[in-house]
Length: 76
Ligand code: SF4
Image (cartoon, rainbow, N blue to C red; front, side, top):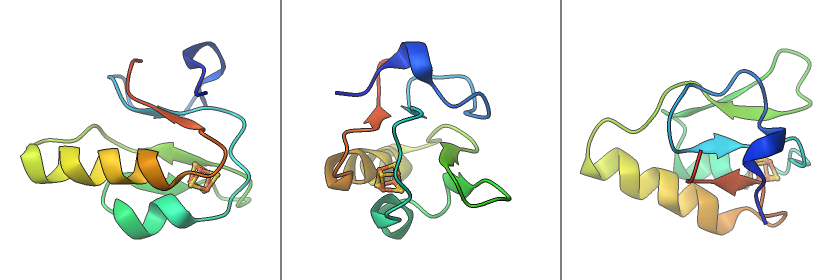
């Protein structure tokens, strides 16, 4: 399960985060490309900002649900 104690440090403050167990499968990027960014060396993904409306919240939730390693949380 996602662990807010090991959030990637670049996550924007707020409930949604990616933790450091991300394996870069890129599934989440298809669901919420407006919210998620790949770090320059392509070793991790983080939330560049939090959802700003219901549509973006739904996208963030879909990203959470498609993550095979359960690296995305919404309790940050
Ligand atoms: S879906 Fe999960 S493992 Fe895949 S890139 Fe996104 S956060 Fe990383």
